[in-house]
Image 1 (cartoon, one colour):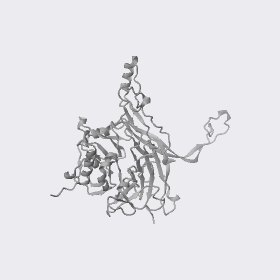
Image 2 (tube, each protein chain N blue to C red):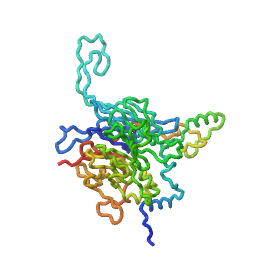
Image 3 (cartoon, each protein chain N blue to C red):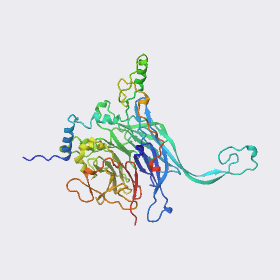
Image 4 (cartoon, each protein chain N blue to C red):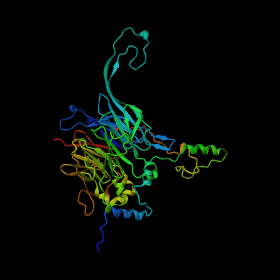
Length: 423
Length: 96
């Protein structure tokens, strides 16, 4: 299979009807859920391909001798305002606003043109008719409406649309910029952590997101495990944070790996806006925005990897960037792991489950079987030992439908959509 | 006397240091992050290329070394030496 097929981002739109994926080859594939009246009452609609287009192309920056990958790092949907859908997609350097619109009728019966578009000889026209719209097979067209370029020296890791639906932020390793969706030739720099002397660089920005309700508030996470909350009303440049979230480290536990595994790979606000979730290499943490000194909940994703850090450092897996997501009611959080496993944590019952996304082990329309990894000692039947895990099969990207119990899980180059069993 | 229990992380650290004794003490420091910031850097330098071309007008051009993929040093890189960019026209498997 093609390396270009590697899925690099997955995102439901605000209604959950559409699911967008971006891949390493710069393409976007959008799936649409089947409408309700077409599905049997005991299951929700299936997702079928709705539109596919090339969002970004590879580029070479000759001035800096830099190859710019076409890989789509993030997709974010705008809320729907009219018949068309809009999304932002970004690679390392350039953000694009795409309009996806449907065409299901076309005009027919022109007086001066044949049906195939050729012009008729006007002298042959003896009667006049009124052209009418006739139905045609649905055509979904994607067109780039805005291109936001040349604002990032470093690699873009996040984009986030503000709750005002007019502005959005884009974050790279060292800077965060604020854009207006209508304006492409200008952006405002709101965070800059580049040191005057690059030798003093100790920390980079790993993710950023706007608060879901407060249009003046955003957060950004760092490679040192900290999250900074900033208020744009405080000053034009938000280098000084309003809040700093950091869990104190146990100095006796410090090792060569401590900082690397504390690096936050994803940060997501809860839908309510009261909490935020961070993902570091081994765990998921829930933070109450009112409490900066420690998370309120911590969930171990794959603690058994702590005794494998040496080999995970050697094969670079320790640098894998896992994402995380909330369900619609903020009661369950989900994140990926290795061996095509993904994990869900129920915040209320404190129960967790490990499931596998793979064709060999799951027949369609059957309930997924919970998995268990045996860390050490005697392996029980149906358990998988840590040493048998396939570290090339990583689930980095997952998404949860905003309203229903439908999840999208991306393995290296396959997309799985699972739904809750309905009675 | 009781020996202090070694945490799994410290045990892994010892393993790594045994394999790579020259490993620095600041893994999150400058070198490591600089490498991350420089992702995508290629060795082709169009400035060097054009300067060298001008200088070399009367001299014999050095031929490519045995490893044609390694474009550095005295060898004058050409755009053809860069790894081929793949075509982006292949349809995604997901849409197939």
